[in-house]
Image (cartoon, rainbow, N blue to C red; front, side, top):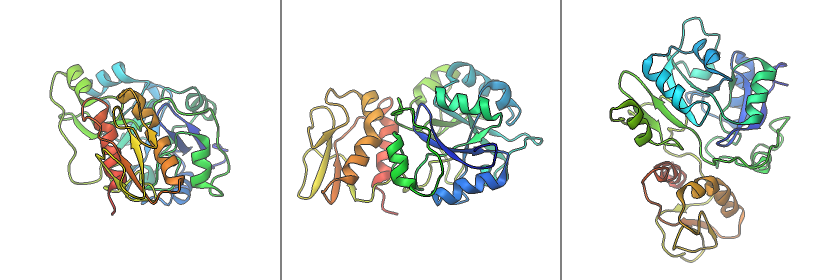
Length: 292
């Protein structure tokens, strides 16, 4: 299907992605059409190894250090696009940079090697809605819009990759499983923040959103709310009864899907610390709660 210019949903270690040949503009257009995604929002290119990445993007010493430490894994780097890279312009949304990563999941790696092309793969859901961590989430969100879902069970990580622009000074464009602190320790310098413009996926103010209003930092449910608990805050569901932020990250989107499908008209979520991967969880929750 990929070789024929189609797209298919496939799991990664973070969430399910909607993959198509990143060198084929018509195939990439199929991703945007299926998701209803704005064309100014770039896509992440997935590659099987560092050699494939260096054929697409310009790597400096900082980027190579990040790749050596965190690839394969949930780190996306925004790097200068090579002038001879055969990447469809829709993938980069016309930017001079490309978002690229080497995934650490057997299904995505097998698909990359079998198809022999880099794969553009945003999350396999309607644009702006809750990201999918199970095949049935994909089917519910994109029913009738895509021809194939590869089901390899629930994704282990549950939150999309960290996105960083390594140079000239490292900047965190989207929090994720790999924290800014880990990156700063590796590089020996502080990690800055994102600018005002769209440089990478996942930067829209309203994103990852259920169809119901979301209230954050809730310690008890109000009338009509489904409360997603954490730690000592119990509710109708919980991200982690033991207060484990890694477990909470893996459960986040699954819990939001359950809340969105329930009878309650609103969703409340318990407070989660900003430390470590909690920063990524809160980033997703703030965007889920933003009514743009």
